[in-house]
Image 1: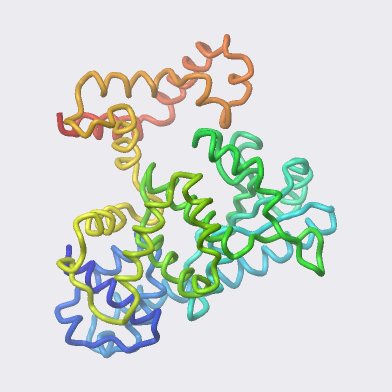
Image 2: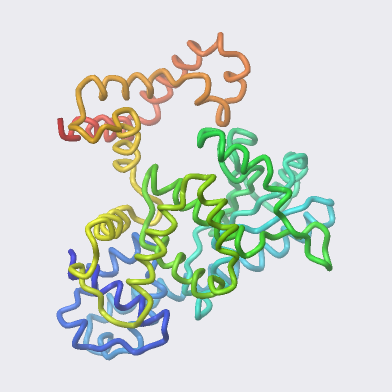
Length: 387
């Protein structure tokens, strides 16, 4: 596994620097295993671009070569379609007088060396929360469907075959602590309008980086974050880092409690991708190796196993073996979430805590009827955590 990860990281570095990989460094490369790992990390397009510069595909099984090239072409096509669809949605938001700001990958992908390298799963857009239901009308007219409105910091819209949009009324939920809540409340003050369009807003380069770090940290501390997080960190730092106001950024990162995470991920990404060479695991420090392997095992959007383990760590942060008492507390927190947990996803019960027992009964019945497999997997994960 370590050898496969090293080969994958080398191919990513070569793609980022537009360098032809050395075939000797890819000796005995298992294209099928690499494809599986790259797919889980949403990195197939970038790695395929690097592989196409070598002779590896010439002597490989045509079927696996086709899978690689199809994945790359689909990623490029999806980027084109999402760009066109996003432009039309934003135009309709302009017409309705709704301010907006594209987030995350839709901005970051422009800093990658080649179009399509940064694969997109969905598009994220922050907008004026006062127009939440007007936006729903726009999206529904365009053929989108959504399961709920107003049950979290974003509403998710889907339209077959590939259109997924997360429309954010806030950057983060309410469960991240007072510093993050203050960041949410003040974010509009940080946004800058396009001189040609008062509804099209954007972050400064510094604030965009801070937001990307905060978003990555939120996932990293919860369900986990994939290797693409490290690639994004490298690409953003290389594209914008030389002009950043580091003093301002340090102050903001400190306030959010993510300065150490930012430094560690930035340092690791530079070590992995700063030059087009094969980096051995032995060159990394122990914390760097732990971060790398955690990302490699998390997939693009993390795992339920990570989510369970990280939440149990919050209940018992002493670093000692997890006790049965802690596991029992975890089960209770899942079966009977408190009022604060409901603030974002179930605001009705937050406003009416006397009705929480009815909500608990509803959750248990719904879980048994519709989420049996997930619950079984979650229980198995808790049981398997070392005592």
